[in-house]
Image 1 (cartoon, rainbow, N blue to C red):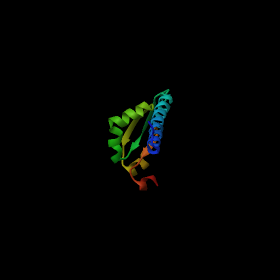
Image 2 (cartoon, rainbow, N blue to C red):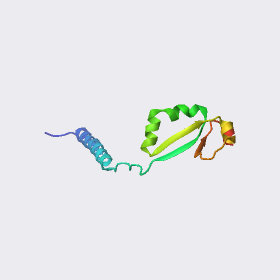
Image 3 (cartoon, rainbow, N blue to C red):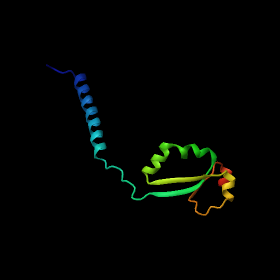
Image 4 (cartoon, rainbow, N blue to C red):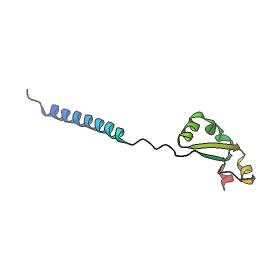
Amino acid sequence: MKLSKSKIIGLIALLAVVGVVCGTLVWRQSQPAPAEPTEQVSITGYLGGEKNGLFDDAKFKALAAKQGIAIDYRKAGSLAMMDADRKGMDYLFPSSRAAVE
């Protein structure tokens, strides 16, 4: 049985694709698992209004906890948080550029 030139090229291309897929799978399996956080860190801050939905989202909280971060916030207006007592606050997350400046 004689193979034509196009069949040989097709067979080589198929073997190359299978090799790449298998190599990718082996490479992914050989990667180390992400390190677990060594300690839980709790942060507290002021949060602008429209970001409440993000910070209250269960998936967001789970991702933060996976990274070792417990996030607590107090709701404050963008300009009000600039004048508020920031003692004990780790972050400010205003919703407007004018408040940041």
